[in-house]
Picture 1 (cartoon, rainbow, N blue to C red):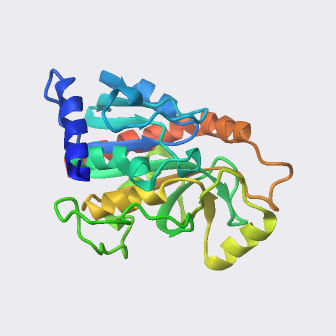
Picture 2 (cartoon, rainbow, N blue to C red; picture 1 turned 60 degrees about the vertical axis):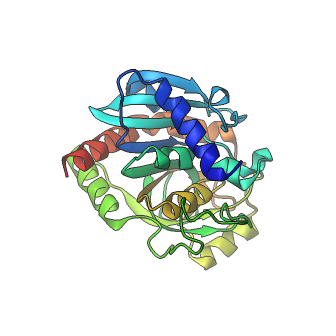
Picture 3 (cartoon, rainbow, N blue to C red; picture 1 turned 120 degrees about the vertical axis):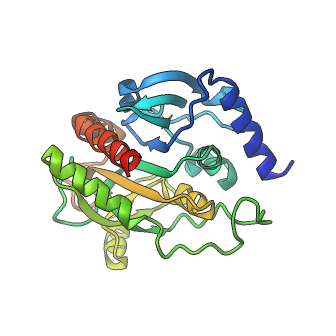
Length: 277
């Protein structure tokens, strides 16, 4: 079965569960500890990943593994509560499959969020960073293998992986809400180990501002399909060699809990301004 056929089957299944004919305008991927943001939606249907053809179950704590469809602040949205990671042992195409389905459903923008370790020494825990670019250091690419031109071009341009006009909207929303957004480059590594201090020094030399274990493959897939992307990292901790103690997933979740209100305000306001534009 072709990849496009797999995508179309999943899209048809999801649409069959929507009695209202809802058309999502924004697709949102909620990273570690941020899944509770979906509780602020007016949800028409919540589909566990394992019930959607082609979707895999998430095995990571803090990733509920549900696709929620409804409205967020009045904006029709498709929200992924958690994602699939390469380090869970899955092929690249399966990792990005949910994002491809959202893109095929016709979302006008994709918002990808994650929890990341701060490499920029001026960052502090709980700050939010808009992604201006990324370093794909996973050693993988979801476009490997035969390309289907009906999905996207063989050699997609990645010079603007993260859409500047979407970042401008996010900054406008943050200013209204009374908080600041930082900007920087996200380094995506395979994981699941946290980075060593030497690796963090290397990443800083390469120009990274923050580091994590997700996002980059999803962004490649979305841009391959022509969908603009807004990337947002919650700086959950300082990276190895900069933090005061050992790194832990509990710290990631605690920080995400602390900033959920700001993340929700940002995403909700972003969607409303996008809808009005």
